[in-house]
Length: 300
Image (cartoon, rainbow, N blue to C red; front, side):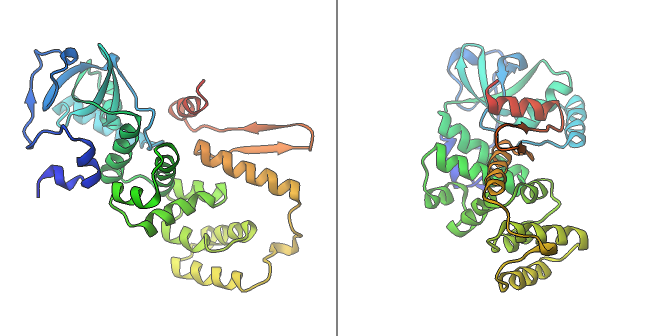
């Protein structure tokens, strides 16, 4: 099986102008803006390339990024990045975000790149498929990317499954993760909770019960099987009330629902506080890169 076929039917179909073999035809002397770009690797200045606004990966391991930068300093970039041309001397990244960021850290002035024709839908699909198949996104990043494909590209779940090479039940299981409380989504994002644990928890309808199982899972380091048993036990009870707490008020439920929606949207735990008349919303960030990601979402 060729390297291109290994990328999956969805990506190879989108990259319709991918070279027919694995050889790289390097033509540094020919400017990228000439338009004759099929199968040619062009050297493009880093200052002419902007990041992909459809990038599904939101967090990059700093240590791994520095290691890649050091490798690029020694060996250069072995696999070119892929961009689309917006205007003369202006390009937008399609795939290769880690290589792009590491190249800047390595002090490179230009990088080898394929130039492709792609609209916004293809950009989003390419970024999603390339990341899933090459970089193993965490479950929440995959879920958010699937949701974007459905909402922004008007794809049905069956069509989405065909694009990413997954059956409908797999796609549905990922999308269901976005209904979990923010604390659980963040634990999934940070690899503190496995997909198996989350699938067991999500079968419980009550939010308070989900959080109870989640906290017990972390504190006691429960296996997936134990969490499944605990979930079944909780579901057999009329209502799980941890510590004798009464049911949350409608106003508190609304605030919790808003926090959940905002946390899912921004990919971080958002805090919402209100006294019924006024309040505040806090969006934490983990680094300068994370802040820039949030500002991009806010279009600030």
